[in-house]
Image (cartoon, rainbow, N blue to C red; front, side, top):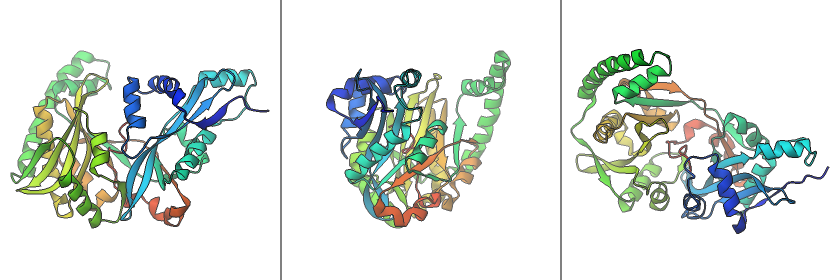
Length: 374
């Protein structure tokens, strides 16, 4: 049976239909301007987008894209990308199946494969993404390979009302949860105050800055020369594009007068109405990792100053574990829970000989820069 759907590359006239499709799935896709910025204004070039179309009605019923991002791959600069937005309007697909207008099979893998081939044609060497459990199957069918890893979400609670919220998720006794939240928060703060006295280092400061530039470029150059790893390349063009909004607070990390790294806090009100500070990106020069706990203490101070209810650090157990950072985070009384996270990669033929090394999570440097919604 000939399928009544067509998989093709994005065309300018698709903009409205693609935005409409994505905005129904993503809260941050709140205007065509936000779509334009994400997909068209990337300094590394326009996103590579594939769509699924009904030829008769001309409706766009599916989407997948690869957002270009420069990467460091074992000391070499490569153009890579992040796959995102595998979306299919299943209500339309179900109707087409009932009408026998399409074969009784999934075309999600074909959609991904189309986007991947277009990406390779444009010179991308490595595509990495974090599909949901539902989307994992189609990624593997399209030739992506899974990276085995562990991913934890660490939070430090700064307000009693957020403690009460956490308790209420486990209990239907809202009044009791609120009272217990205030009591536990007081105990928690006492433990934290004692911990801070131990880890605070007066030589460390986080100095705010407006835009990434020469200082941060030099820091990343030193950082990338120090290790053999795979990571998003942290140069000014990409970082200013990603973190230009007011909700991102950027800091140079200093020990005394020496710049040893940077940190980015995403400060925003989440869908539950709580104000959070998310540590989305950070790099440190090698000799400074032992100061990580003291640096996080400074980030906690900034989160308190901004009246945040909690601070969050999403943590991949990758090359950072050489410095045992997860143990330092736990010693700071962060609450952690393991989170199911799929990480998959697609390699160009040029990198196939490196496949075993690329599939080893210990060779990666992930921060939440990779997992925030692009």
